[in-house]
Amino acid sequence: MSECTLIPNFLSYLKYEKHFSEHTAKCYGADLVQYREFLAPNENTRSRDDSWQGTTATATAVAQDISVDQLLVEATVDTIREYLAHLSSHEYSKSTTARKVATLRSFYKFLVKREVIDINPVMAIKSPKQEKKLPKFLEYEEIQRLLDAPDTDSWLGSRDRAILETLYSTGLRVSELVSLNMEDIDFLGEVVHVRGKGKKERISPIGSSALQAIQHYIEFRNRRSQTNDIDPKVLFVNKHGNRLSTRSVRRKMDKYLLAAGLDPAISPHTLRHSFATHLLNNGADLRSVQELLGHQSLSTTQVYTHLTTSKIKEVYENAHPRSAEEESF
Image (cartoon, rainbow, N blue to C red; front, side, top):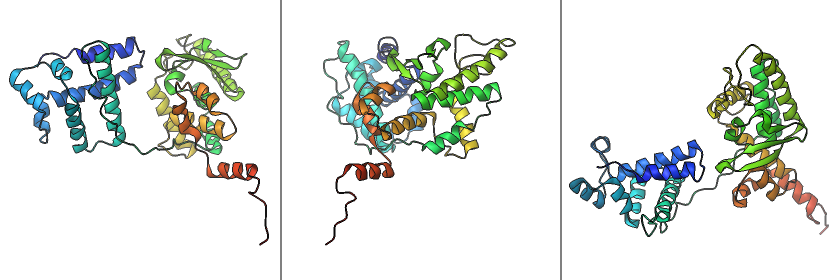
């Protein structure tokens, strides 16, 4: 099989034209590599997978040495259906399968746009129906326990408290948080300049508690920078003075979840869910929360419209004219 060029071209398009993050582009790439292996499995793949039967197109390709790009271009609706059956036989979840279908739909849409093919074969494919899961969120008491976990008498502890406060106060994605620079924090205006997905920028309000935590961390950091080399541009740095990674933030949160006696399955993204849920539970309108989260579509934000049972009951009792009236029969 000759070298594949269409997939690398698509990934370059995602990164440099659509401005997808490195992580997102990697996920698309992994899905497409798996699809490519299904269309044109090498000997190692076939020897590892006894259940592999291959498609008619693949069998022809192996015999005639058709290129991988040609297999990708000549894929039909039936090819995609055979691939989905292959995924099903390996017991992939509905959510994972849906993501892979979305990847293929975007890839073939790109090929249509570049006039490599005329019709997107995935357009006739329906994504598997998924069970809608409500996002997990923390109650405010749990948030308080988590925020109180770091030791703010040390420079790393003060940094971690500032990180947790900022995540909960602004609802930032972790990737947005670690991208913050010193100049992005407006202490006077109480806002943060955020670079979001797809290089889209927004201004996000930030609460006084988070600003105080950031200021406390900066005071520690300034003293340390006199003796250590710290990147002066970056807001949240690691112990070596360089920009923190998203993985480091996750590791730090794991540590404080344990210290606070909270569910270790909670992720930094749970603070974003909690931010949105608490705003809605306290009367914020959906459109405003959409803007604060940096969601392009309102439908993405609607997943947060779940309310706690106690809140629903409170709203009902306050709003319904006959919720509390007693009648004698």
